Length: 169
Ligand code: ATP
Ligand code: MG
Image (cartoon, rainbow, N blue to C red; front, side):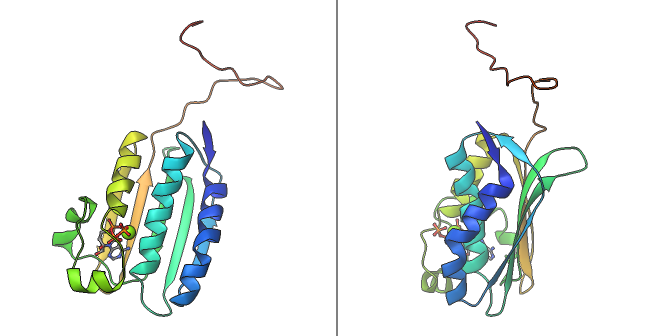
């Protein structure tokens, strides 16, 4: 099913605006046209978990940017950038493990179970997407999920979409 990424990010942002207000975090959307053929609920959870982390691990007066679009190679991407506490280099691989949380006591105060990024990793691999994490302690974090090039049937002018079916192909 085609999922419109700008529309999905807008929906995520609306659901998170209340949360962000409490922590005085500004959410900005930077949507560019992009679509992924996939499972809407999984893609939504992927974006929602990244965005809620970006808010939860931010600093007062911080900023969260939700972006999507197509890269130079025409691959769709979702990118979440925050100006928060950051993740130390030695923790950057571990945070994708189930139940792993950096600094248990600090994380505890911010709630959560440590499953968010494991869900992100699962949803990304289900769609054949790649996850890139760039982060600096005290500066912030940028996570980019890049999907494979999407192949659309060449429908021509005014044609209706062709559904390829294994039984008729
Ligand atoms: P849950 O998402 O299940 O509510 P959680 O946020 O603790 O709980 P994950 O989303 O899997 O779990 O994140 C794992 C850990 O990685 C977090 O506890 C936090 O220490 C760290 N982390 C995740 N995202 C960020 C971020 N944007 N900035 C700084 N640290 C982060
Ligand atoms: Mg989380």
